Image (cartoon, rainbow, N blue to C red; front, side):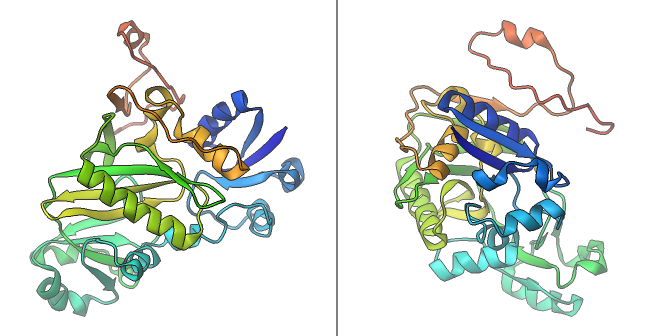
Amino acid sequence: MKQVCVLGNGQLGRMLRQAGEPLGIAVWPVGLEADPEAVPFQQSVITAEIERWPETALTRELARHPAFVNRDVFPIIADRLTQKQLFDKLGLATAPWQLLADKSEWPAVFARLGELAIVKRRVGGYDGRGQWRLRENEIDQLPADNYGECIVEQGINFSGEVSLVGARAHDGSTVFYPLTRNLHQDGILRASVAFPQANARQQEQAESMLTAIMNELNYVGVMAMECFVTAEGLLINELAPRVHNSGHWTQNGASISQFELHLRAITGLPLPPPVVNSPSVMINLIGTDLNYDWLKLPLVHLHWYDKEVAPGS
């Protein structure tokens, strides 16, 4: 039996474990503080459900493991500076940007990037955290300790947001799902919609860009690429070197889920092109209790993660 250890034991790790069972792959999601001696990583392929992690006894062991797939890729993508530098190196379309080192740079920033600046911390931050939308009269809203730790992008007038989820095998072959249209609210993904046939021009551009990125990094497994839709084409927003929440619909809406696709890729199993026969919608349930009445709706599939409803959610 093949074995896979997943660094991180959250929702994505659980879904990878579920996807491994029909394939006869034992998937072990492990917490970052786990005792290395209790983790069967020596005989396993190693992957991760997160981009960055603190140094612990376990992560120190895994960092040296030769079977940690994409081990050297995670630091590149986890830092928005090196991620943007990668796009520029490959000549891929992304929002104009620069490093924001000091408050004195703001006049030049607005002169170069325009009236709306999007500030993002280089590392960390998710669901809109660690980001600021600033105009010239709002720069004092940025905490001083962020200078030198942020990039700043041009605010883009986009008509929509899409993501492409694809996978690359050890031999360099790639497969992709149709582009997924995403709806965000306050920086949090609320819904994803996928159709069997995406906009052909956008699909071609997205596949070309993600292929170039995965080839440059010699990446193996599933990667997601978020893009802005503009009149001139797609602009890459960010990458995720892992299975992605905008690909959750593939569990019930495609011939093979992103989780199975990732396991196949990293363990060297065949990687067929996913087949999508009908539209799918994924609703991200946040701040609500479990309601089994949802299951009365035809064609509805529930994936419940057992998270407690937190105040303010």
